[in-house]
Length: 435
Image (cartoon, rainbow, N blue to C red; front, side, top):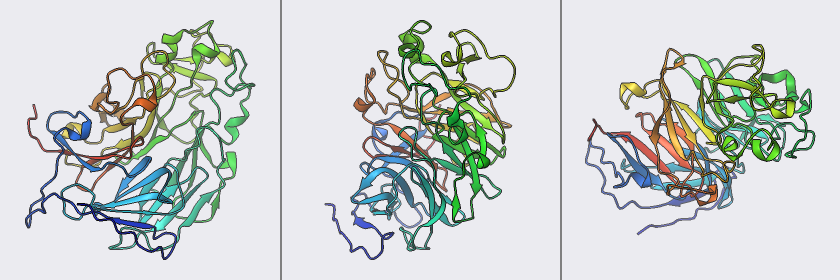
């Protein structure tokens, strides 16, 4: 039987405390007894891998991070029990969270532990909490790292990552589909130049260690022409920033003379970029056709579905995926538990998207891209699948689960969060039944 204890809030960051007893037997000294799910918690994995369901209802989970001691922190899309961050602890080493605490007033997407602090983003700021040794919930108040990001109605998530030189990189998505004069209106031309690129549609760079910074627009911009990259990570192996972009929507409904429903379902590509300072990736003026490996002129700017971009002003993707899979997190695997073929490669959580109708939905999986020397070594592989819960899905709301966040534990386990029900999986390589 579960026991629920509601503690008294002493300070805002302490939050709500929930303690649940685990029915799994405690491991004997020196032994870890993982409570693997018989069906991997409803998902499919490659041979040799198993999953533990860490928790099944933490709230509308976004990104996730794991401390060296195994404590798990999840940023939530909306408050649960009045708070925006979930903290989980496994007390008996079976993989299942026994203790859950909610704390903090911030809801959003980004969350990561860096240099002894827990960094968390809302849609308009990045804050940090100093980690407290032995405590699941940080004991101090949040410090403001960067504030003043645009409060936008669409593509508002301020996901982020860190490099190895003290820098913080923040995604600021474009507040529109294609920078049209009349947003999402059939036949409406694109604004040229697109004024939204001054403060949106790219990656912004700040100091990771300085508090009290303020977003000031174009002068802090690192790279531009990226519609929205909720998925981003710094690859420590190649010392390189990578992002995966959400491609634009509604090719056929806005420009039916050039595109049909099948074109719209499959185009444009969801693009993975290697990002360097000053790069321009082409949104809203161009998009990428993954079938022909071409950067094409957007219809809002005179394109017709066939006209290729001239010159080399815009960077090409490292790898491209079919349209509207919804890439929402990127993780370069830095652990050693998984087989060598996974080392230094990239996991991508595809959340799914609404804009494939009337064609069936796609995405709802975790893919893996092998990397060698900073380059994609081959096409992607499906690593974890079955999240949708059905073979043919017509609406994202009908999906059983939607993979959202990725993290690596200190033992090399892969953690996956779900935004639909708040489920969390811990994927472990056991070598059982491996081919």
